[in-house]
Amino acid sequence: MNDTPHRRPDAGTLIGRMEWVAPRGAIMDGDRRYLMLRADVLMGIFREMPAELRGPAMEAFAASVGKHGGRSAKAYLEAGGNRPQELLETIARYSRELGWGCWRVIAHDGEAIEVTVENSPFAEGFGPAPDPVCHAIVGMLQAVGTLVFGQPASVVEACCAAQQGVDRCIFRVVPAAARVDADASRAEERRAS
Image (cartoon, rainbow, N blue to C red):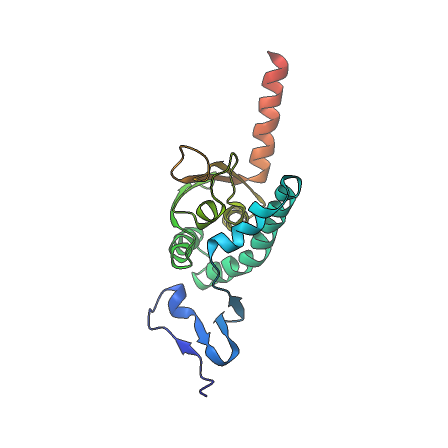
């Protein structure tokens, strides 16, 4: 049996960087191992879970993606010469290649990032839901936002394709300090009225 990893010829892409190591049953990008898994299998874990456990489990999923996916994002930032805009373009491109849907990323002068995701595997895999379910994307965007802003980022999934009548997921990424300031301003406005 040949132990030589098989690298795809798609230069300049994540798939081109990956190695399929058949004897080990591994898909690798450097020292980062990937896994191919059906979206309904992954998200079915959350759907099958009792409702009171689902929120904390999805938050843990976001935290794990932020931590481990953040390492990948940091490697991509460094490979791109530490240019935040290039990182955003790379993340949008790689997300598509990984099957995380089609991402459209718009940065607003270092103050906010808006991300629209069409065909989210997380929304599709979970199925109809009253609340957003794309916690993995939230976690990845927290990591990416932190790298882009140079400080912790806050992410809100404003709407999700899993929700009735919604056909895409929309996320807003801001520096966490800006969200705290905005929340405090809104609270002050409510007290004043």
